[in-house]
Image (cartoon, rainbow, N blue to C red; front, side, top):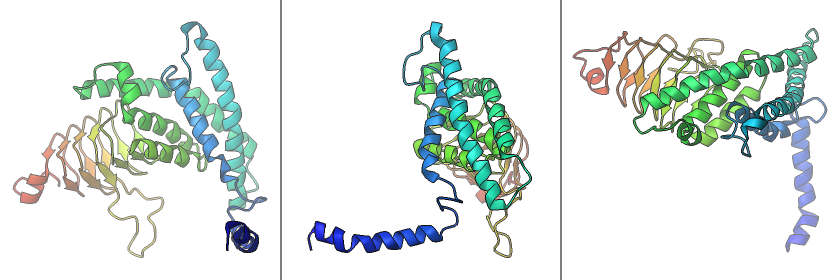
Length: 305
């Protein structure tokens, strides 16, 4: 059977089967569900926000100083129009699924959008501190622009700071789309729910995982392959631990070296502690302590108490 015959005889049956499956799905109905084709649009909006945060670095064209005010105003208007539409659609979609008929989705979308746009200067201030931390923490980092253009952690952290704000505003889906785009591009997986304070630096970055309920203090530096995760995502009955503190807290001035794994919602890495590479920790570490795979295994001076 040649291709033309196959398309005429077999393809209609495949189309009918596929259409039936789509019609049975409550989440992708064309009338009541969400138009998931908007993911690429969210990517484009995220790129526009990054270009506002770092004009000339993430923007598609060179921005002259004399044009900066016009460029920023034009981009922010463009972002507000496009993103506001998606946030409104998502609030409406979520309310429909939750059978909520009391809230004003239009107002919630407006307030969320305004909160994000008004926070962009503060997000940039935080990111400048993150870049300075990279310059201070990596002897190979020489120039400010080099770090923005070539360090994957900057895109990952910048995306996180945008997604985290939207997550805290309870905007559905968009924060996860943003964080997973950064994950796919940088190899750094930060859940938008994670709380990360200023001057945060991820050196190299590949394979880093930071869970939803993780809290990270000021001036923290971590290396590639670090996991800040949960001991288990399920309770004793096998149900997901939703709404619980599942991931560790990392206090100020902590350094966590490559491939260390720190698990558990009650685990706290104290201020100024140093966690050595390949260390596996499920209990808290006292402030200022140095813990490594060697002294954890030997149990001579067990600092992971």
